[in-house]
Structure formats: structure tokens, C-alpha cells
Image 1 (tube, rainbow, N blue to C red):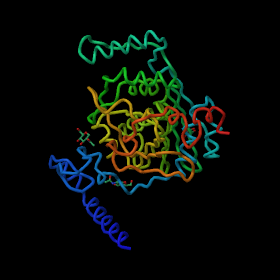
Image 2 (image 1 turned 30 degrees about the vertical axis):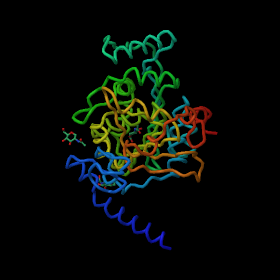
Image 3 (image 1 turned 60 degrees about the horizontal axis):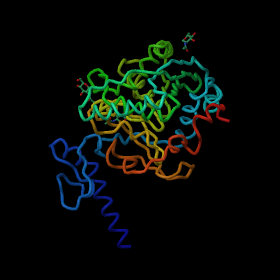
Image 4 (image 1 turned 90 degrees about the vertical axis):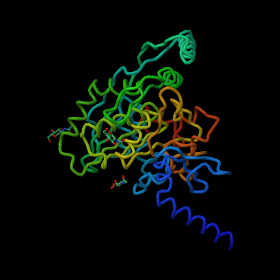
Length: 361
Ligand SMILES: *[C@@H]1O[C@H](CO)[C@@H](O)[C@H](O)[C@H]1NC(C)=O
Ligand SMILES: *[C@@H]1O[C@H](CO)[C@@H](O)[C@H](O)[C@H]1NC(C)=O
Ligand SMILES: *[C@@H]1O[C@H](CO)[C@@H](O)[C@H](O)[C@H]1NC(C)=O
């Protein structure tokens, strides 16, 4: 009984003070915040500090709830749909009345294919890091980016699904190799060059026209859903940013859910994203390594926008998950040290790409 009272006591203290915004006040004063004691400053026995506003639990928009059923039963199949050149069967499983507006396919990324090239580029990259040589990696091979747009006039939903490169090791290598490039995102930070380029090739390769055609029609009362896995998740995120910034659709009616999304932009852009989109979730399966790339450190420090939803062990219907209160802190999936590439392939215990290719049967 006593234990219960004590924990209720602590819970209410935590609850009251965290809703009063202690963390953001600390950071605005130029101090760090200790979540363990809910106090500002470097305190003895405090194991972890928060030094960025986006990691403050009180800066999260708590009016939007994570909907696990929606994510599992609707957004995951819609992400899988992008893995088939005919996405309609997967789309129809989720929204029986949806019609396909179009699909878009472009050569969009830089890939290296030979072991010799990968090795030399890594050596050059390392020499560059210690300022021995100046290394600007050349674009070499192309892979495909694919996206679709669908519209359901009964449910009043517009869906955009994205597929990125399928070679995981190439993706990892590219993400490290291009670590220095960035592209300005208007006045709000910058986007990692590799993802910006992929987005831009898709956008100029027909996707912009498709987007303007669909969103140019009357969309009163419609929602816009964007989704994708891996690089597809990065493309969904960057696309949502441009659609909002170009005023093509209201961010308050936009829902972004990505799976195993890598970091796409820097802190300033992440701040813009979080203050623009109330409904934005990044789903992370256990030990998936890709959300931890490109790293938060280095010449171009990248930072995740919110909101991370982390499934620490499994993704079955009753598996536990955590809606994380920090955008990209030493918290949730960032506490993982050992990664498992299979956790990037399977989401909700389904091999998303393979399942999508088979029409989600
Ligand atoms: C936009 O509306 C017109 C007229 O109702 C229709 O013919 C057209 O198919 C619509 N475009 C899209 C992309 O839905
Ligand atoms: C985005 O940029 C504008 C103009 O520089 C600035 O006023 C605004 O605070 C920025 N938004 C965020 C969320 O950083
Ligand atoms: C949080 O999201 C809700 C719902 O879209 C929105 O009305 C509200 O303005 C947001 N609050 C903040 C602080 O951004």
C-alpha cells in the first residue's frame, strides 16, 4: 500500500512538473535538464541530461495520439504497396474504393556496385575525415525510386506511398559516404543531400505534376496520408515537407507514418517539422540500424523529427511499444548498441517488401 502511495506521489510530482514545462524552461535559460530529478542543471547522481529543446517531453504535441491499429492495419500495407509495380491490390486491402492516380518511377540514387569501388571510397572517406585529401564522391550507378498516388473519394483520403533502393548495404554505404552534403530547406534548416537528390529526381520526374493535379482539385475534408519504409520513409518525410512549405495541402490534415526511416535533416529542419505537423510518427522495430544513420555527430549533424514509436522486442498485436517523449535523445531506440539488420526488413512481423510484391496476400 505504502509503495503504491509513494509511487502515486512521485508520479503526480513528475506529471505536474513535466506539464509545467520545466525542461524547455531550463534549455531556454541555457541550462541542461535532468529528467531523473525533473530539475535544471548538472546534478550529482543524475545519469542523463537533455540539452536540446526537441528532446524536451513538454515540447511534444500530446493532443495527437498514436493509433497502433491504424498504423498496423492501414499504413503498413500502404507502405508495402509501394514495393509492387502494381500497388493497387495492397491499396484495396486497406481502402476498397481507392483508385490509383498514377505511379512514378525514376532512377534516383547513387550506387556503388564493385567491391573495389566501395573499398577505395571508404579509404578516401576516412582520409578525408582526417583532412589528408579532399574527397568528393562521384555519383556512379543508379537505382530506382518509386512512388504512387491514390485517392479514395468515399473515405476522403489521398495516399502517397514511397519505395527506395532495395540494396540495404548500398543504402548504408551511401548514407555514410554522402555524410557531408546538405541542401537548404527554405529558411528552416537543411536536408541531407542524398535524400534531397532522390526526392528531387522523383518530384521533377512527374511526382510534382501528379501532386498538383490531385491536390489542385477540391480536397475539402480530405486527409493526406504519406508512408514508406527505409529510404521510402525518408522520401515520404521530405515530400511532406515540400507539400507543406509550398502550401499545397494543410499540414493539420496530413498524416505521416514511416517505418525504419533514416535521419533526413538537421536540427533546424526537425524543429520546423515538429512545429508544422501535428501527426507524424516514425516507427522503429527493435534493433533496426537504419534509423541511427546518418549519425547525429560529425560535420553535418543530423537529427530526427518526432515522434518515435519504438517496439523494443517484437511487433505482434499485443507487443509492447513506447511512444517516445524525446525526438532524438539518448532514449528509446537510441539506447540500443547492437543492431540487427533483419529488424529493418520485418515490420509488424511481416517482410514488408516481399509481402507488398505479392499484393499483400
Ligand atoms: C480532378 O477533377 C476532375 C473533374 O472532376 C476529374 O476529371 C479529375 O479526374 C480529377 N483529378 C484527379 C487527379 O483526381
Ligand atoms: C522557420 O524559418 C522562419 C524564417 O527564418 C523562422 O521565423 C521560424 O522560426 C523557423 N521555424 C522553425 C520552427 O524553426
Ligand atoms: C497540437 O495538435 C493539435 C491538433 O492538430 C493542434 O490543434 C494544436 O495547435 C497543436 N499544438 C501545438 C502546441 O502545436
